[in-house]
Amino acid sequence: MVTNNDEICEGLYNTDSWDLFDCHLGSYVISLLQLRYVSSKTSILGRALRHGIVDLLDHITKNINQHIENNTTTIGTEHRLYHSRNYTLNIQEDNIPYSIINNNDNKFNIEISSLAPTVFYQLRENIGISNENFRQSFFQNNLKDFTNPGKSGSLMYKTYDDLFILKTLRDYEARLLIQILSGYHLQLTQRVTIFNRYIGLYCIRLQGSVSTINIFIVIMLNTFTPSLKINEIYDLKGSKINRNSMGTLSLEKFYHLKDMDFRDLYPFGIRIPTNIYSKLKIIIDNNTKVLKKLNIIDYSLILGIRHLDMSEDEMIYRLPTGGISALLHLNDRLGLMSMEKFLPNIQSSNLTNNLTSLSYSYLKPLEMIQEKIDMNLYYNNDSIAHATLPIPGIINKTNQRVYIYLTLIDMLQTFDSCKLLDHTFRKLTNHSKHLEYSVIDPEAYAKRMNQFLFEHVFIDAKDDFPWTITSVSKPVADLNNKSMKKKKSNQQTTSLPTRRHSLDRQISNTIVEFRL
Image 1 (spheres, rainbow, N blue to C red):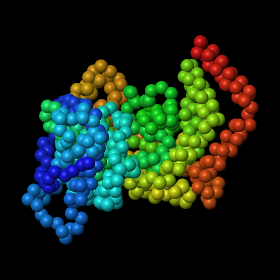
Image 2 (image 1 turned 30 degrees about the vertical axis):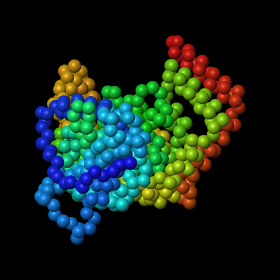
Image 3 (image 1 turned 120 degrees about the horizontal axis):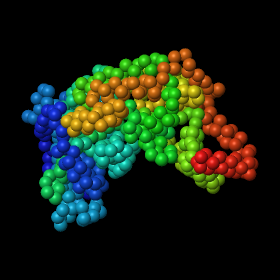
Image 4 (image 1 turned 90 degrees about the vertical axis):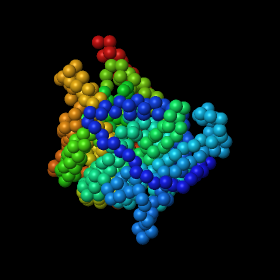
């Protein structure tokens, strides 16, 4: 059980101006040590944080007529305001192991601060997230831990409804967010942008074995909730080196793909309507200019693709392979055939049933870029598309249809002196390819990002966008399922000996090729 120890106090958070020549080495080292210490306490942090978010949220005045000016903030310092409270977790009641506590007490004390609560409250209101809706996502169920796909090693949580993601930040990242918060708020309310929405910032303070530990946690919108039925997720930076997944593709790896994976799977890019292409090009160029002025790099365009004309099986085996890779693919294919025989459609049916009760993301691509399309044509009766407004796309050369979801994320990494040294070292040791590494200077980073996105990812469809639906009275998903069933039934007419003979011939040819 989490209990409140005292009244909520208010104060101003001290943010030192960040310096281009600050290497943030201390922050890197401290964050690494702190995360190692708290990694065994994620259940405690998640439980206390959830309680603190709900508790401190109720402290924000909802009625402007009830506002009482405090003695802390003045005009221009609202982004530095914090609300703070101490909490105690009872070890025995919450079944927390004694091994994670530094003393023999049955209590675990923790302080939680909500940073810039009024500014983030207004940000949520602008997005359409009321205090009550935000509260509901944290009130009933515990937070869910999930693996961080990035290299930072940050702890990450999701709310039970998958609407919000919580991620730990280094202290200099938290300071940067507070410093740019007023401008960031302006960008989201007065500009057309695909920046991800940061909607809360908290600090957890607990006593470590040597000193006090401060853990900063940011809350942001989840771009790809399970209800969207996303098939592939790409983290795109425009770089080439170490930007591909390892080994053969699997359904799990389709959610952790990178730049070179996109180039392999979509060598000719994805066509999108001309009006959307032009608007998106302007918006992303403006967004990268903003980040360049702030000396920010290492951000990503996270891209989600939902296929309308491609099955999961076709997704995995669409890459041409040879040699030993072909043998591995054939072996996997045989395994899938045997599994399909005994466990037909179990996973997909369960997934479909579970998705019907989940919430959609607050981030809607066409709404973010303020563009409109013919919904009757591109969305037909697809309820998910109508609710989430994805960008329609067509895979070049195959004319297969997709829905696209996207946003810019990880916008708090500055080009500090450590990164400058890394970039200089790459330039001296590998001059011809130094711009292909992830870490480069902000101007080159922005230029590379725009060039990659609008030469290799998004292609201007112009007059070549054959989005045809045979019957507008049926949802797109139903049409796809019908065509897939028909395709599978045609495949099943092939006799087993013939199929086995075909596989044997492929294996033999591969072995010969491999020996050569």
